Image (cartoon, rainbow, N blue to C red; front, side, top):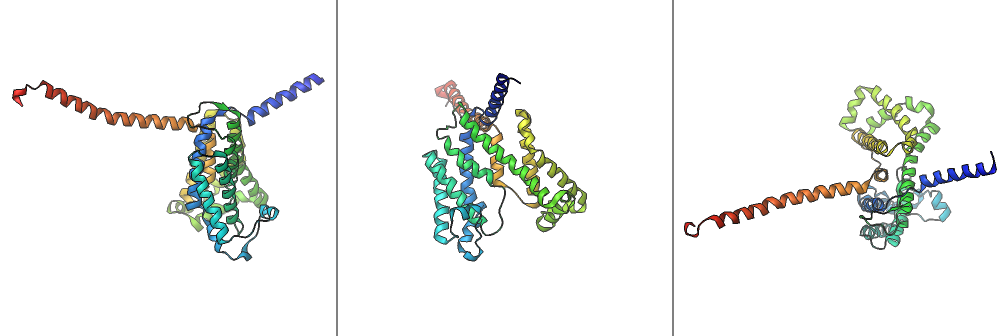
Length: 316
């Protein structure tokens, strides 16, 4: 290959990589996602994931700093520290939800939410469903000007959404890799799902214990789906959306069976969907419904008025 040919091939590859990492996507999509994300932060810190608050009262002897804690020298949890981190996160998320001070409020949320999660995970179990959410919190403030009705397409918006998508899919793929790394191929032939149903299954989930082969088969389906999850980036837009819907069906079935839900990850999977289109459809439907409720009353008033106008004065 000549030098010009090699240069042309490299330029072509560079354009493809750039097109993948920086696709021009609607700014409004990021704006809608941002509102959902900051609303979820409030729900998460105040209700869903409060273990960080409990650890304020834990004996520091149980504190085992993670890598970030060792590098940054983060202290063990204390009541004043947890209260400051928690309520700073709540206040910043509420401000960010209004769209004011998008960079300052956004990065404050990113810092305090990550710290609150760190406190929760430095005393034992580490959840694997929050990495993509941390990426979203770090990147959303980079697109400071993002209106919900902004019809522009932006490479910055595309990068934010693509980064979240990549991290969300990495969550699936790396989950399969961890199963194979620590459990080997024997994992799919184990009784992992049956044990989970016995330990924390719902009445719906316990029904499958009468047909244990279904839980065994589900492990094969799960492993295959997680290993093949990166294929989603090779699909067309329509099939990509359908793949996301299938993942939501999968998570709904898991929750219905063993009450496990990866809430932050479910929010991040929304980055694959045309959120601005869904919002416009909901608003249009709401407007039609509101107009439909107004017309009968207006028509009734006009009809009554017309009827009274046709009645001779002497007959009233």
